[in-house]
Image (cartoon, rainbow, N blue to C red; front, side, top):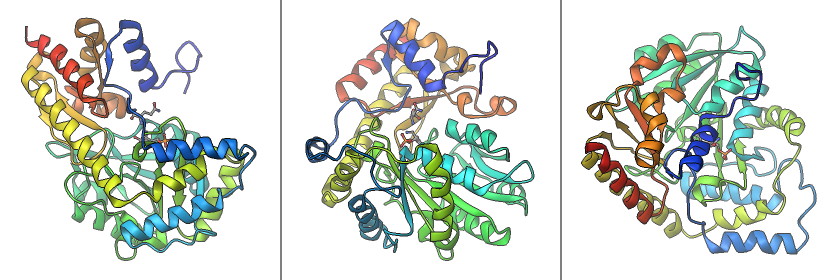
Length: 384
Ligand code: PMP
Ligand code: GLN
């Protein structure tokens, strides 16, 4: 996790954001929205701070948030989650992922199977846990895994199948067939499914369905989400994880020594968000989809080959037609050249697998329409 010079190596997100800052480029790299979320939620945080909710909250989370998470899982997915025994509130989805993996795996004999490309913290936490990471490639054109490659990767050594749906960075939503196969393999090899669903409310093709809703899945699935994306409060770092009580106890035993607790006054505010009417959630997805449309039109006009996402913050586009067959170099020069920052997909894969994704670039669409319009205008300069 250290750079060659022995310093903390910045994440790809921090690195590209710093480059955007230095060059004054529009930052379509790091995924964070440039508009605030619902006023009710922001006001609730202020009210909680002024009402004195400023000391350590309970270890599992503020009871009202635990209840709100349980109600939310029932309202949207028909899932039955015990707020007292089956949920832990975490410092973002990031801590939930860390606590789950550290709780479930022991050493190099244990394997974590993950789809590649993957969110950067997965491989870092797998390394910290000491377990062996096995990757299953997401294949072009639609970034689905090959069922045979998936089945070959999951063996009796697999402790965790780590899933992210909708997916960062590709924008893919897993097909029903693959989701069912994940559950089948978890049963066959006695593995736990850990599923990161932080983009649950930003699915464009069909309503999101957590893996835990599949037959036989809930008993061996830990479901993770976060307020950051749904309520445009990525800096609050309120996440949660739910699943069978004994697994949640194991997660809590790790979480209590990672951060102990977090985000006291933000927790009741997120509870307000989770109880917003359905229209809030459908509007948020609709607005983001429109931004993706706008971004895709701009990328298309600039000469990229665009892969339309089914969910999440990001659109992937192939820069090869623009001479960007090496997207790594392309992304490093883009801010200086035309004033737009983006992240190469190679940042989300192991070095030995980079060739399969070499020309692909991830653009964040979670920006104001005027910002996307300006970015599109600058990108058009690539054709010149
Ligand atoms: N998982 C995925 C797939 C993400 O894209 C992100 C970042 N937004 C996270 C986890 C981290 O979420 P949080 O900020 O809640 O820790
Ligand atoms: N999840 C965000 C992304 O994928 C960034 C999170 C981070 O900076 N660690 O861009």
